[in-house]
Image (cartoon, rainbow, N blue to C red; front, side, top):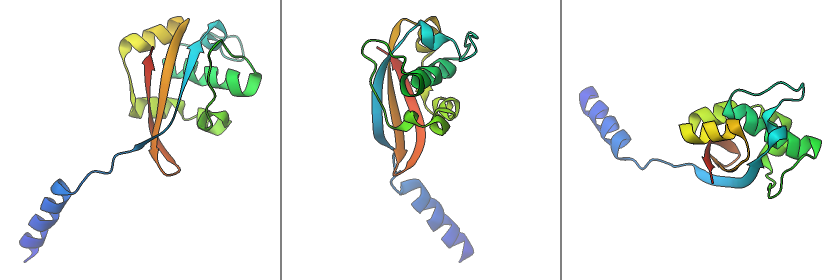
Length: 126
């Protein structure tokens, strides 16, 4: 009986529909020179650091480049602190990461999750 229940549970686990995360929000931004440096003037070395600084510049410091769009999720400082984890769970191509670190590029960020839970972000360079 136990083997039958285990087999049934395995069958249900492999055939049950997977709940995909929803696209909750997206925005475009231009990565400018100001986004490449932190608040102490230190050059940032990781793409998620630059993306985080871009959102801090936009929401907190009023520094924006032409065409920067707003978003509600990264308007909160605590959410910006999650950028590294969210990018690691999502995707960013190596060429996009290099372009972000050089600056003077346009990024498109998609924020995915379910309900109020953010799962990951996907970042592309336009």
